[in-house]
Amino acid sequence: MEDIPSIDNHQNTSGRRKIFLRGLIEFSNRCRKNCYYCGIRAGNRRVERYDMPDDEILQAVDTAWRNRYGSIVLQSGERNSAQFTARVTRLLKKIKTYTNGETGITLACGEQSVDVYRRWFEAGAHRYLLRIETASRSLYARLHPDNATHRFDARLTALRNLKDIGYLTGTGVMIGLPFQTADDLAADLLFFQKMDVDMVGMGPYIEHSDTPLYRYRHMLLPPARRLELSLQMIADLRRLMPHINIAAATALQALHPTGREQAIRAGANVFMPNLTPAKYRAQYRLYDNKPCLDEAPLRCHHCVASRIGMTGCEIGYGEWGDRR
Image 1: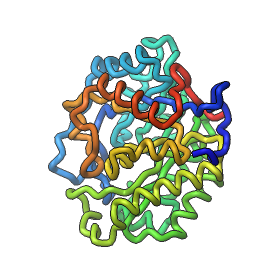
Image 2: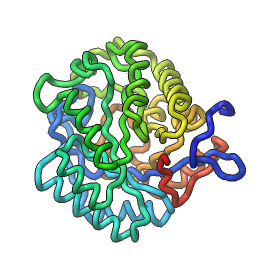
Image 3: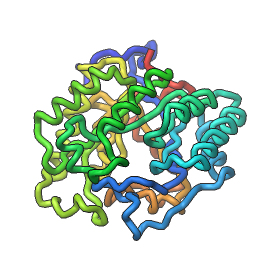
Image 4: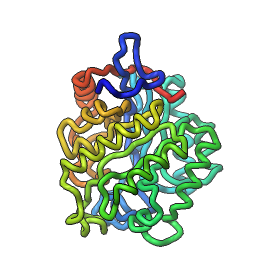
């Protein structure tokens, strides 16, 4: 799209936009939360739970490093046990050593204490993605159980703590939720601006048949409209915050085969190839019809290069692509 504002540090000398790769490693689907929209919620007994062994995680890291991805994303369900947080700390140190400090690390492991966030930051993580899912308190309450584990204010506090510690902080929302209004979506955009976030991962809401929110699927916009609305949100956010990183969410591809390419044309500049071994992917199904469940990581890599090439952009190999 020719009218996308220039993105700080995201163009080469020829004027072609750079797209930055974040190799996604979904290393555990165990979660203590019961969010009404999520397929790996604690209450879903149909999910086979897993924790990837360290050697498999490092294999995935190796794939990213050798193919010159600038960064990886370590993503899991939300847990805050001492055993889990200590394991993540060890993993961060191992990854930094293994890649000679060349690979940037984003964490997406949910709400944690300030002390845990600080330990992970000191161990090598420098970005953190914690999705708010909606900036509307009332809508948030309809998406989560009413208990101490699912508090809107706790989410806000965690985001502020991440920024205070020094993380490049990201968040995101779902678009096209039941009960969601146009005013809610406008408030989401203003929330990103007010928080002055560094990155955003947002995409269409897609239902999961094993969740409480599935009963409201009759209220959903048609898939084509949810895709259109998601692309409009990306374009509006790019104009509102020209210099942040915006991910082309995988959920877009669930609605249209070229959904992620369309997101890049709308203003997204981050692509997250899935490096999770195929044997785990079906168990990290946050929503129905998740794409690429049986695709090997190297095949995914070649597919991504081809997809980005079709957009007229180029990959920023070996670059972290941080917002200045």
